[in-house]
Image (cartoon, rainbow, N blue to C red; front, side):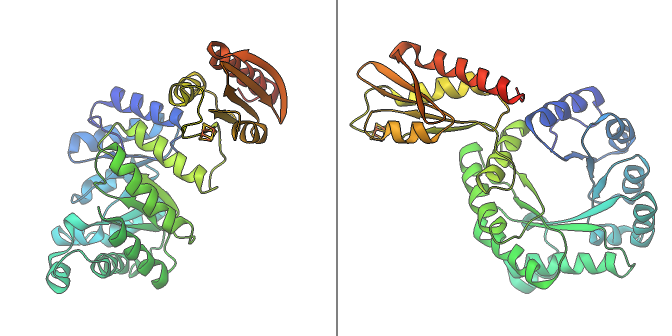
Length: 331
Ligand code: SF4
């Protein structure tokens, strides 16, 4: 989700471009005011990835987003209904324009009726709320929507999605909301998404971190790649180091990662700290180094191609990685 003011069209498009370059596939922008709604058509037109407008209460902004070329709108029909029953008109407009919708149920904004019934935002409360919202679209024969039931607690969130997946075949958008600062939020999201996606539950994901959105995209991509759901690009296999290490593995792995961070190729590079387990892993990788005795033994596709002094390891690996990328025609 963008963090710029949506009314600042230039800054929003710039951020969308950065997110796209980082591998983002869909972007959501907040639309809390009439000025934001006015900015949507230009943003939707100029963005190279689909734009979703995030609207909470105002039906007129929903119509503006649909007419303005947004690919989708996140809006809860329950909220719209409270103010003015325009759900039917919204489903008609969305259908006419081929725009999909997303119901986003969050622990923090759970319907008071369900809060009273369940006492707090339990998985059952989240799922029931989402199914009630879904019924408001379905009663107008509108089915082009997906659902999210986000919670900050992965266990609650996982169970809520499992209940939904058992109850219908709605597409589901996964999210651990307010997951926290980068480290904690990454772990929570990876845990929850892993548990659900391995069961085949989940169609789109959003990682929520108290960190720049590009970091959210990077984490999301890494989760999908780790689960084999997105083609892996560069992978660094590096050992954790131990008492046998003969080089500073942490620094070596950092420097290699930094040097190759822009390489978008499906290449596995192993950075290993000693000659005990190192050669085995380095041989298995596309490119690898096993370090020891002030030297680094460099492997490409299982074969030793060079032995270099320790201070040349990083440079040599980067050089070979770039050459391999060029040969693959994917640099
Ligand atoms: Fe220890 Fe060597 Fe394994 Fe690294 S590769 S963890 S240094 S045994």
